[in-house]
Length: 93
Image 1 (cartoon, helix red, strand yellow):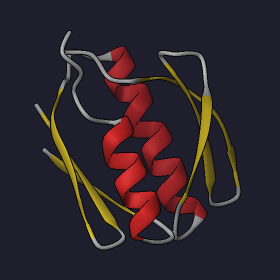
Image 2 (image 1 turned 180 degrees about the vertical axis):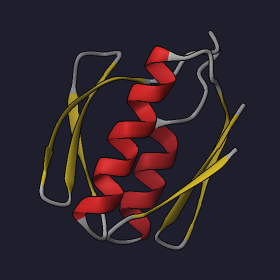
Image 3 (image 1 turned 90 degrees about the vertical axis):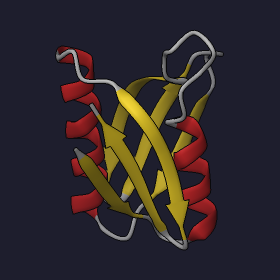
């Protein structure tokens, strides 16, 4: 299953792609979606730091929050993540 998100710009898409990349232990670097504020998503990473990702609109931010919640509650896994321009793609299994 392919899920696409439109970020504010290429920098945000690159940041989002790296945060959702698979780590050596087959887990994600992001551990929690903390908050959505309009078109901004705040995430907590494994190292305890918090980062924000800016999206084109609030719908994209909410869609990523839902996708992360689904990943946490189901056995779905991220196969890959990549970006092109301001678009970030996650391939789920």
